Image 1: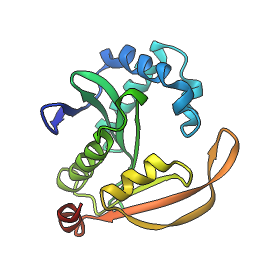
Image 2: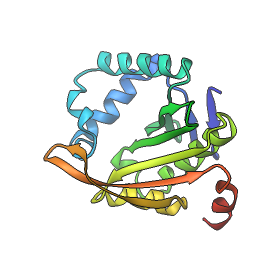
Image 3: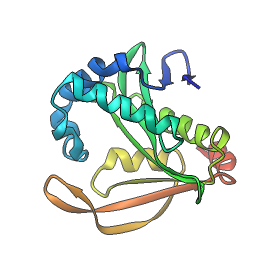
Image 4: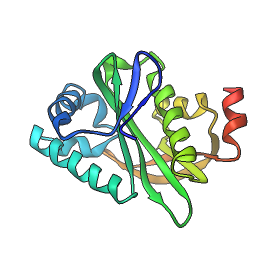
Length: 185
């Protein structure tokens, strides 16, 4: 799988090394907005660093350890959605994502997250998908709710953000639940 067309406007694609500049530009334009919840953003300093990150993503993809996908909206790089830490033994993975501010409010992340869950269950044969986000990150919590993931609890002091430890909410969905969840949401 090199790309996954969601609709005429939206496509997920395995990153290419040539995407480094577009990815860096997206992160740099959204640095202030993204860095509160994504501490790695503070370590992104140039195009080469992003090209190197894409190279690492592709190695992890080839090893079956992760699936990082770029989100393309009308041909523009809008963000990223990923299956992180694919665990073959437990048949599970967690979802991570970010979206540039100019692309928010259009349902893009809801569609992209649904699609990556489809891929996780149908292509990878995983059993459980999890999503963890800061309690006060309302947009991320809302994505989990909109796609019908089950709230499994709040973990005190689980996330390290710019200002220290924060509580996180955890959501999950199982492969056998997903068809019914999709009908409801």
